[in-house]
Length: 189
Image 1 (cartoon, one colour):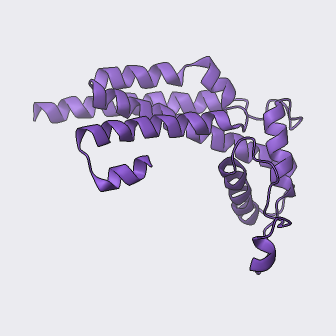
Image 2: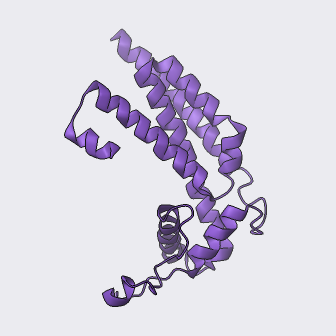
């Protein structure tokens, strides 16, 4: 019973940390009014804007090098490019027609923010897993207020996505070390 009360006392604190992390990362997210001062973000936006998925799919064209779904740019990997293109397509359908390049950067920055807040949460769990709830909460709070992470969340670049997946992989590796299983092995892979 006492352990349950102790567990519940940390829930509001981690929600507070996550709320502060989200607020700091969303504050002023459109600070440059779409002028793309970050060169990586600008390049990703240009590549994403050039992508189109033919409907109905013509598989012979889709799997060819001349495919309109081929970004022809792989410096940061294809996942961030395809992720942003798919999410902006969904947003476009929900809120109506908008120029992907002009407002798509906001969708990308919100994605970057969500991945970074996810990293705060993953770091809390990793600290809790390796030590205890206090260490987990402190590590999450330190990351929530880290200026570099707040700054990087104000751009859609691969940094916040990469850190999220690195921390997720480390957390899964800890699980794999403690309790080896095929499902965790596949998740780590």
